[in-house]
Length: 103
Image (tube, rainbow, N blue to C red; front, top):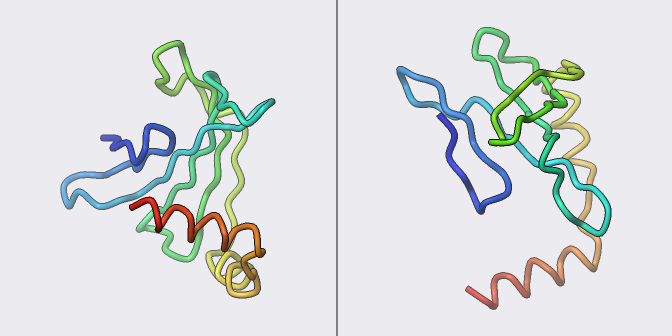
């Protein structure tokens, strides 16, 4: 099952516990537009809790997955390390503040 976050990214759920197992994000193309034919899927597998898999997906005209073009698995620790080192830029901070002000 997929659940749209904002019409762009979608969460994927897995039964029977209805847990989030993936995040699907459209591929950005020219002029900030989203591709209607490709997206990235970031998937968590509870049977391999120390790994994440990123897939480049090809979509059909109804935005359903046609095929996985490429995939790469990597240790969750690596992502956690990269995220902990990343600092927001002044532009990102300004954007977050402006979004919060709109709410």
